[in-house]
Amino acid sequence: MDERFDCIIVGGGPAGLAAAMTLARADARFLLVERGEWSGAKNVSGGVLWGRDLARLVPNYWEEEDAGWERFVNHRRLTFMDDGASFSLDFKSDHFNTPPYTGLTVLRSRFDAWLAGKVDEVLEESEHGESLLATDILVEEVIKENDKVTGIRAGGEEFFADCVILAEGVNNLLTRQVGLQTDYVPAEGLAVGVKEVIRFEESVLRDRFQLGERSGMSNEFVGYASDGVEGGGFLYTNRDSVSIGLVLGMADLRKAGKKPYDLLNQFKTHPTVADAIRGGEVLEYNAKVVSTGDMRVMPKEIYADGVLVAGEAANLVLNAGRAIQGMDYAMRSGILAAETVVEAKKVQDFSEAFLQHYRTALDNSYVMQDLRGFQQAVQVLHSPAMFQQVPRLVCDFGREFFTVDNKPTKKAYQILRDVRKEHIGYWDLIKLGSRAARAL
Ligand SMILES: Cc1cc2nc3c(=O)[nH]c(=O)nc-3n(C[C@H](O)[C@H](O)[C@H](O)COP(=O)(O)OP(=O)(O)OC[C@H]3O[C@@H](n4cnc5c(N)ncnc54)[C@H](O)[C@@H]3O)c2cc1C
Image 1: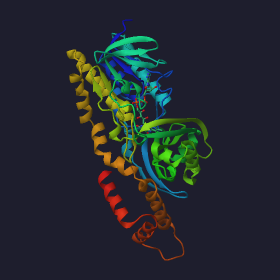
Image 2 (image 1 turned 180 degrees about the vertical axis):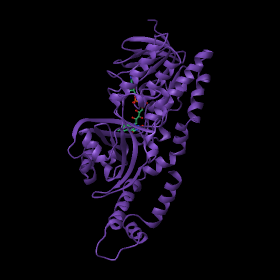
Image 3 (image 1 turned 120 degrees about the vertical axis):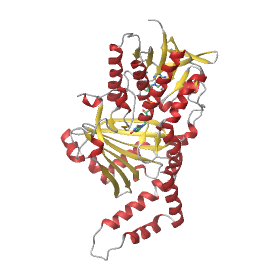
């Protein structure tokens, strides 16, 4: 095989596979290199894949009996917790029930492998058949000639291309090697995710969470879940298991001297969570670094001569209180990067000047609009009051509001006034409330 390609993609996660599918459909000749034994073998997400981009990549994916997703989300819950209580905002709606769905729970080892299989199917149908998904190979180095990226070194061999898409995820060593990201990323810009997959009989799971045949629930938690450490928890229903975990600010975790796994164990003993996972069997445990969505730690640029950076390698992740978004951003940026490569191929121009179209496309997409628009939310959610005082205040309010005893009943505003005094100063609450109202 001629070892020259139109494009080399490093990484077979959502960003890399979205790029690969886009190139495969455009009949471009590419090589995707993934270090895992198969795509997804080493990947971790909570995880809900938000948005509808999967339908762009695999039209009518929901019609396939054994597609790689678990359940579509039609039930969402945000839970505030202290050590004994939980208070939830709960939303279930049939508008979520129509495909293409806007939220899919996924287990990455299954989902990524399935998506890679779909790319292979498109390649098999294509006339050229010279593109390749290669697994179990680590890309050690990016090759540069005269300041232009021209290929990669992997498994002791060299491969060349007009353009390289770096979709290597959060540990973006190659992005650093080409000089697009500084070597040092402060701990404040990173979080640690820990997660367990807990298995149930499917019928038990469906009864317990009131699920339909393929419908599912996503539940995020704030407060006791992270025990005073910046961050929060999640519980997502899969076909016959739940994914439960925490995402914890790395700097804060270090300061508090706490261990992620101890916090996860503690979270699992909370009465609300313990009831939800009772009788389940722990199948796996994972831990992984994840970006916080703070744009100050994004790479300096996401393109240069002969190279584009997509997905979490470009720190495209956001948690602005509604959902953790990373896989959808990865997919959209992978698609946009590949579309730029297709256009560059038409004019045979892979220079920095042409590749900046990728930056423009990403800037104009919902990804950068959200990241820019919710930077203040990222800051507000980092403030200790949001994961300490506010959840306790909400739970104390719930304790009084929902308790019917043989005593005179307080009005809601009186309860709020009294519990507020116990947890946070009046002006602090007003300031936080107005910041949150503007930011979220
Ligand atoms: C605990 C946790 C919960 C999360 N929950 C959610 C969620 O609910 N929803 C959501 O949207 N996002 C969630 N995220 C974030 C999401 O997982 C990531 O943002 C997303 O996976 C990024 O996709 P990617 O393709 O850019 O990178 P990755 O998924 O990390 O894929 C990168 C790929 O590159 C490969 N690779 C890396 N370096 C090399 C190399 N040198 N050579 C060859 N291959 C290489 C890796 O093996 C991997 O397959 C969560 C993350 C964590 C840790």
